Length: 91
Image (cartoon, rainbow, N blue to C red; front, top):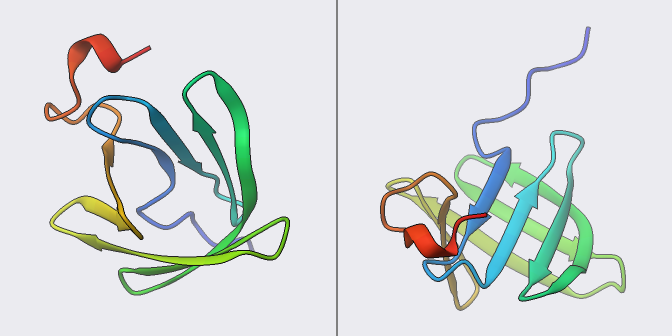
């Protein structure tokens, strides 16, 4: 029986909407930067509230979710429907 997706699956965006990172239920992610779709793609794993990323080129990164905010290296990402994301930045 397949397991249910974890709570972090979905679209995460910077406050200005310039970076959009989608965490997919299959353990993959797809990150867009500005008009560049799929700028970074790879896989991720979740342990508690910690995420480990390995992009398709082998580059690694980490992230942590605290109080509903994803801190991914130097980025601060919010759920796309979070009121902190500027309305103009939403698709």
